[in-house]
Length: 406
Ligand SMILES: [Zn+2]
Image 1 (tube, rainbow, N blue to C red):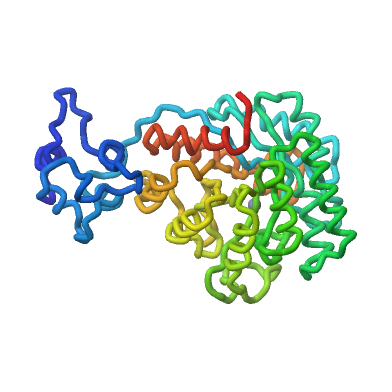
Image 2: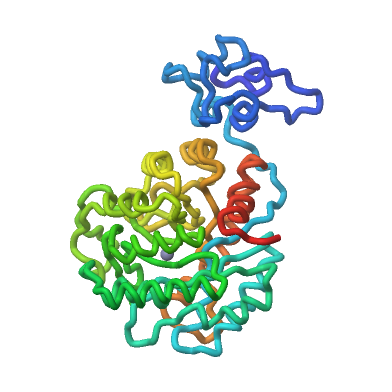
């Protein structure tokens, strides 16, 4: 059976191809017609074709056909979506820190690439900053420019103000009463400006290039818990950068000495943050772009199952670990595909595109060079998803959760 052409295999499992061809069974088609309980796999009871075919596909004999098993039999979904409209929920207009007049240029640069890349909207936010030689930038630097294009941009704030209050003013995790008040005031001010949430804020943030901040506080830092309550009150979203460490490790070779020599498990604090207020929606940024190597599909599935207020934005560049990325040269990794099938309403695309006007320097300008690749790979990713999933992950989930108006 192994080397028979697909048409013979298709007949063998009872799929009758239409004369026009292109009726090859795919995991997507099988799931959409048979997976009644929507768990991303087909049980023996759900299977609508002859039982022997089920047995052949169920190679581990556990009574379920997973996406992976079906893909091994039939291949993954063919490239079939032409172009899918999408929203990038994680974009940084980096005007060059300290250079105020460059921010409008950065916003224009973002606007200029949208139509050619099928991007309908962007969520603009400051990076998660800590004060160093240059002043931090808050969303006031670009909000006016973004407001000129209300049908293309929404904004988030806090990366230039709330994040420094956490990492610079209370790294020990004991903010005083005064700091808590200032923090809450600033968060309310951000809401008043019409932001759709708070971002980008960081828990563990590795330093990947010189001048790129290393940041680390526990997930259950009191200011993060306070922010969860404010977020819930306004029914908005927190965009958080959290490099997960599942078990203690020494610093990997490729990571510079701007990072500590070892990393302790940090997942438990993050889970306490997620549990603190279930009405606070948390968007965990950069899924699939795994730096340390611990952000597996198993972790993804476990976290989404356990935390109903958790969402993830997918970044279409590989992390430094080179592991756990959803895109392969053949299409979408089957393990990731089954997670998407299982949690179709919990993912967004968060490109982490940066826009730095000519002449900018520093890490943001370095990262800005990846934006072209990110856009290309995001479109490529969507083209490999079944159309309904592509619409949800690319567009509808973001419209709903970020409350973007058409
Ligand atoms: Zn980030």
